[in-house]
Every structure is written in structure tokens, then in C-alpha cells.
Amino acid sequence: MQNTANTALTLFCPRKSCKCYQSTENKITKDGVYITKSDFEPRQMFYCNGGKHRFSETGYSDLFGKHGSFKEYDQTAKLNSYGLGTDAIADVLQKDRRTIEQWQKAIGQKGQQFHLFLCFTIGLTIVFLQMDELWSYLKNKSQQLWVFIALESATKFWIGFELGSRITYTANRLVKGVKKLGKWGKDNILKVATDKLAAYKNALENIMPEIPYAYLQIVKRRIKRRLVTVKKYFVKGTVKDFPGKSQNTSFIERLNLTLRQHISYLQRKTLGYCKNKLNFSNVMWINLFNYNYIQFHKSLRIRINNENEKFIKKYNHNTLSMQMGLTNSPLNWRYLITVPIPCKLRYSPLSRQKTRFFKVRF
Image 1 (spheres, helix red, strand yellow):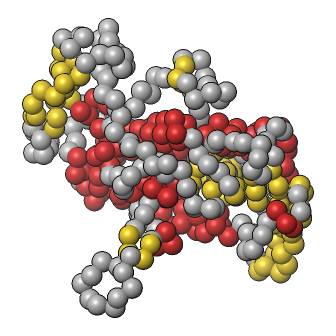
Image 2 (cartoon, one colour; image 1 turned 120 degrees about the vertical axis):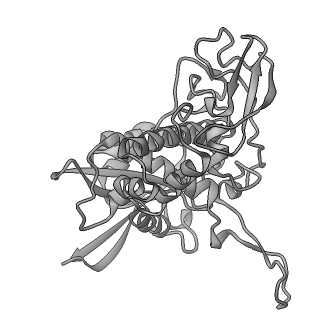
Image 3 (cartoon, helix red, strand yellow; image 1 turned 135 degrees about the vertical axis):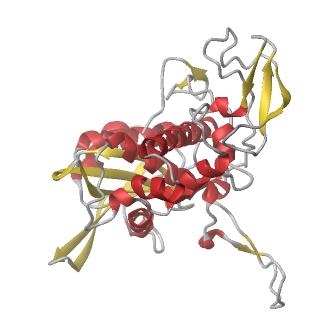
């Protein structure tokens, strides 16, 4: 496991009109708290010494001025993670649909910025990569939309996703994002497992020619939706590269089931399919943040007490980001909203130095 990192980031001025906008050398100090009409929970104010002005902690996200409370933002994100659609959330919170969509967009985009910034800055140690795709619809049932997903199965960390057609172009974008976020060395061989879709093979050959990897395809044959046979094809490498019970795509298939249950757009036999691709992407990023940084996973718990006495803590629970070494503790939605992420910075795929010429995306 990697060395754990603290997610307390440097404060900067988020106001675009300020001459010290996103400058890390500018001094930012706390300047009291305030209460809004829509939220009785105190919010922190900061003072920009370079620009000589004050700004709120919500200025680090697009939720600034959206007239909602932290409790409502938290409820919106949680209800998205429990599989409710936008109309259902608006009905539960007694808000207009357009208001909920604004909150979803702001939280989803901030989740994307945080995930990509943190993963790229620290770098992911990827040992066993599994990739798969799920089908859904866009606008109507005559137009399919595919969700390509990448998972690090050793830690079960959800690396990222891509929305698009079931072609090599979408697979290329997925593999390119994985490559930029990972830390690679020639000593260790990356293990990759996918289904029989040829787009993954083409993407790996195009994007990762200099990275040593072993590639296994799991080919499943079904008759009337019933699984009949499962065959294994070692496209690159041998059986020795996949020891034990690693010759499968079980972990990514289990993630697919989780997403089917937690995202309304992916539920089968429903009319609640996606009408707007951007909304789909925002809901996916909300669920990714919840899955990686908030939820405890039972398979990652560590037993600390072998006694059978009651009312004694027996396990230490971990999130996927803690297991991957990205955070020291589970995060929450308020932290995501108020954490300072320099979203205007871009990142070079060749080095981990901040620059304004490249960007990491999924």
C-alpha cells in the first residue's frame, strides 16, 4: 500500500476577478463566520490579503449563491447514491427540479476535480486492472449509451469511467486516463483482465506500448441470457502471470451490480433512462466519490480484537481511498464542497508538476 497522504490542501483565492486568483503564494486568513437565510449552520469566511476582500468557504465550488443549506446538499448527494432520480429528489426535498440539477452539477463537477487532482498528485499504484462496460440509453431506447469502467481489483478502487459508444475510441479515452493517473515502472508487470471486446486490446496496444503488462480475456457464452461456458484467452502473458484466483473479472462485475442499484439511469426495465449526458456524468462522479472516499467496505475491515465480549470495538473499517493510500480518514460531502482544488490548473502526463498546458480527464 502507498504512503498515506493528508488531504488538507493549501488555501487560495477562488474569485476570478481577483489579481491573486488561485495563487498559492497569496496569504489567506480566517475572518469570522456567517449564517445565511437558507442555512442556520455557520459558514467560514476568509480574507484575501492580496486582493483585500472576503470570500466564503462555499466559493471553492459552484454552490456559492445557490441558496441551499449544507444539509440539503448532503441529502441530494446521498439520495443520488441511493438510486433516486432528479424528480424524486426534488419531490422529497420540496425543491424545483432545476434547483436539484444545479446542485447535482456542482457536486458532481467538484467530485471530478477532487478525484483527478488527488489521484494525479499522489499517483495510483495499479497492480491488477479490470475493465468492463455497461449499457444504458440516451434520450430514447433507439440510442444506446455505454459506460466504460476501470477498477483496481487489488484494492477495489474505482479509477474512473467514460461515457460513449462501444468502440475503440471510448476504450482509448478510458485507458489514457488510467495511464495518466498511475505510477508505472518497468520492474512490475501490470495485470489486466477484460471481457472479449476487441476495443480493450486495441486501446492497450495503442496507449500502453511501453508499459509491461499481461492481458487476459474472459469470454462468456450465453444462451437465452443463461451462462453456458466461460473460456480464458491469454492475449499477452501466461497462466503464471495470474496466480491464485485472479483469472476472472469478478470485482468489476460486482461493481457493475452496485452501479445498477445505486444509479437510476442504469436500472433495467425502466423509463428513467438518461435524457442528458451531462447529468449522467455528474451523477456518476457523485457515486464515484461516495464509493471511493465515504463508504466503508466490509472486505477491507481489519480485526483488532479477538474477544467475543459485547460492546467492544472489534474492527477498524477502511474506505477504498484509505486502502489505496490517498486519505487518512473517511471524507464527507461538506469537505468535498469546501476543499480548495485549483481547477484551472492542468497536469502533464509526462511529469507530476503542475502546468497549464495539459489536463487529466475521463
